[in-house]
Amino acid sequence: MALPTHTRAALLMLGSTGFFALMVIVIRFASESLHTFEVAFFRSFFGLIAALPLLLKHGPGLLRTQQLPRYAVRCVLGTLSMFCGFWAIGHLPLAQAVSLSYSSPLFATIAAVLMLGEVVRARRWSAVVLGFIGVLVIVRPGTEGFSAGTLVAVSAAVISAIVAIQIKQLSHTEPADRIVILTTLFWVPLSLIPALTVWEWPQGITWLWVIAAGGLGTAGHMLWTRALAIGDVSALQPISFMQLPIVAVLAFFLFGEGVDRWTLVGAAIILGANGYIAHREAQLARRAATTAPTSAVKPGE
Image 1 (tube, rainbow, N blue to C red):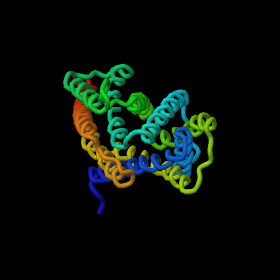
Image 2 (image 1 turned 60 degrees about the vertical axis):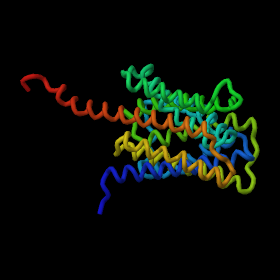
Image 3 (image 1 turned 120 degrees about the vertical axis):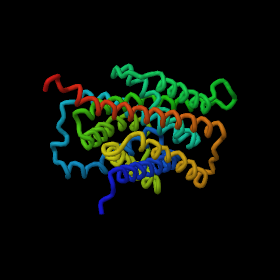
Image 4 (image 1 turned 180 degrees about the vertical axis):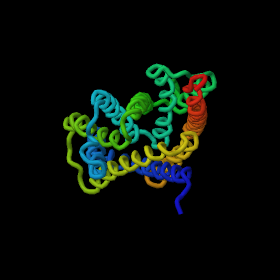
């Protein structure tokens, strides 16, 4: 018996969240012996290999697009975001790095206003402000607990937000599988160039970590796009938040990392703000879908 659509969407998002959480762990392991640039390159290279079955499924036509300039810009920014995010995973407490990555939707709300002209009302702006308070709670600028490295994680979130807006623009005309394959295809040369400046071949088990990072990242991306295609964002967003406790538990047992109270409080604020923003955006999308057909019909027709 086929599962209900909302159940399938939830399972896909849960699978995606698990893959991304495990990717964070293997990136930390790989970062112990490789430079961030190399970790990013191998994640892209093996991610491309993992995405090649998409070409077998759809054929070479999947690579044809009239949006190459947009892909190029999106992938340059995506590579920068990957460098910053991977550096944070390799050098900050994992729970802190993941918590700050969840500030990306806050920046995406601002980017949507500036780049897409979207109208954001007072309640969503309030959620954005609340989310930024959560970021400040974690970063704690001006205190002894402040680390300049946290700004790298925030930079990753800012750039990721801009990339998310670009993906939203691309998805109007481009299928999800094309976005996945072309993105990974661009990432390989873009990440290789800086990696060559610090190149060292992986040794021993490090090969396992970099191969796993590519496979897990691509698998997570595929499940994520499919979950959002059939499910409600406001219902799926809280499931994606499970990445944080999964990473925190694994970091405790594998690396002996605890979670300080500031990260817990800040993460709770950020996730709460994100949950409200996702809920509100879903409400507005449903309202627009309900009113659009009526407004499109002329009087008398």
